[in-house]
Image 1 (cartoon, rainbow, N blue to C red):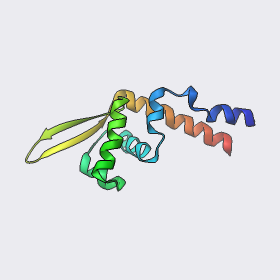
Image 2: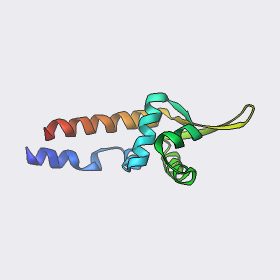
Image 3: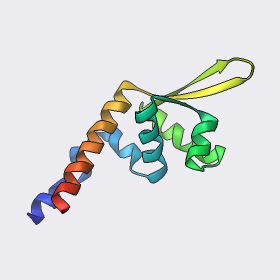
Amino acid sequence: MLTEVVELVEIGGLKEQSKAFHTQPRFSIMYLLFLKRRVGFTELKDLLGLTPGNLDHHLRKLEAADLVRNRKILSWRPLTIIEITKEGAASFREYAMYLKELLKRIQ
């Protein structure tokens, strides 16, 4: 049983993209985007309690892994919309299933 848990804990079996959201802020960003599909930059910042610079840093890492993208929309004021990509949604779903399996084995 212990060797099964150790094998499951090893991240090597996950896609390289999944490693991009092993930090709490990036996991939270991906979770919110997975649920909502797209969120405004300001709303995301407020929901997560991050500074604009900190959120931007994490979003750049996720964009580099092709998990999210941002779009600029011009309305009565410029808006930045953050969207999860198809690859990002699939990668996050895989990671969530990995965590679910890990928790099952721990209980």
